[in-house]
Image 1: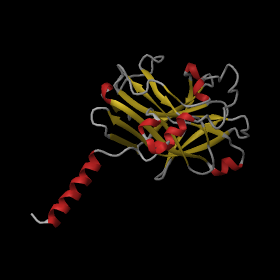
Image 2 (image 1 turned 180 degrees about the vertical axis):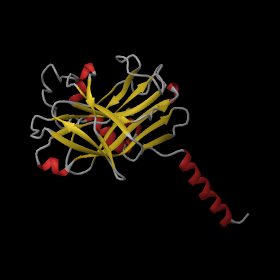
Image 3 (image 1 turned 180 degrees about the horizontal axis):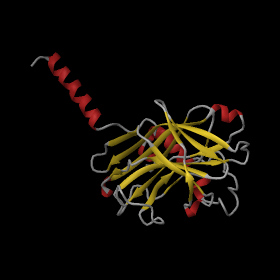
Image 4 (image 1 turned 90 degrees about the vertical axis):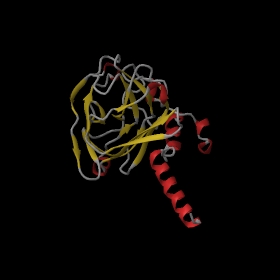
Length: 247
């Protein structure tokens, strides 16, 4: 076998290996920042009893890389009004939702991109009670999703019917990311909201919410401002020591 042939075969092998075992997500450094830095702003009533929840002030790891009895995972996000908001109704655009899970056994990453529909609801501002009060209006075009936002609710969304099955003992890191922006016209009119990225473990792919008995969060990223241009929102359960280039 000639050198040229060997070289060509080597390139093919490397290409296949990269496709089967992707490298760490490109946004992992941003995800680390979104876990260790404080939230950019606190939602309305964030400092009183109604809204005083730890992850609203800074991202935090929940179950992390130890799902225990949970066997599936799903990314999610919430958007909330800021005290400076001047608009009753607004729209938030979302695109490029991704979930990456690293195998403890192999050290390789498996990435899922969510291009299908998203689902969600308008929830009570008493966040811990998880009270859904109305459906989230979701619109979709070929470039992004658009969801409704209002000043009286917490907007909560997730990829529809898209939980990823996991091996609980094989999880060694999670990264969730997506891009979002406030509708530019609504921002100019005074819409001011924050948003984050997060993920929940679930008992299985079909389990329903049961007062936190069928699910638990892997981690929740910090709240970041929604601007009239695209920004990245992230969460990770890995630590900075794993990625020295980020430090």
